[in-house]
Image 1: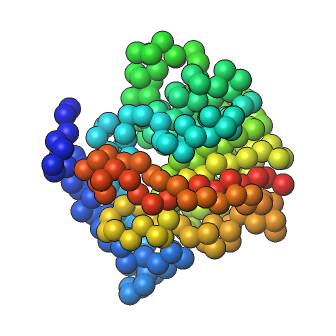
Image 2: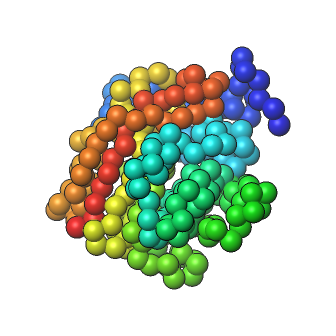
Image 3: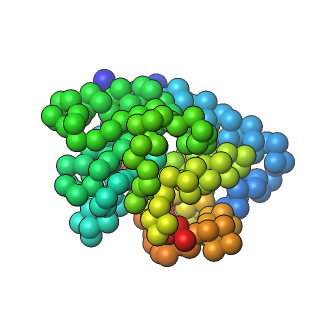
Length: 253
């Protein structure tokens, strides 16, 4: 389905309008002028909208090409060994890594089956179905991960492209715990999150350096090795196609 260049289609508009409530969230994740219950309600609304539009090919984050930060990491030799794309969406990052990095064994997972169907279709059209593994997974529940995911353990690299910033507080610890169990000692996470410096209304929850470091630090078995300014590329009808983000490189101790 074509999407207009002047205004978002009706498939995109609900995501844009319902996520506007996040503009009142501070960088720490707490609301600046409302109660914590209000924040929880905002996050529930975000999750519902994301589930509704994910995998349609029309969601603002489904840009039908790999993210720029992923292309940059590939050029720097950032992907090798067993690579897990955590929250792969419609598969553009995973397919790019699988093609561009012959030494990488890519497993791409998402909680939305429609996303995986879209990714599988893309892989088929490109003759790449045998080049990567696609699997449904709730990464907040390690015990229910499929055999196709667990048989690749341990992973050397985890790619999180705009996944972490979509989790509410009560799911973050479970997600981080799952990543810790999936990743080998010394393995890396590349995590691209929306920055609190992105002040335009709408979009996902913003993540500050201090907020991320409260979960990923030596006392919890991690070290944040690098933090660089980045971009979350979006459909051009949303924020002109670019949101301010940060790329965190995190190593498991």
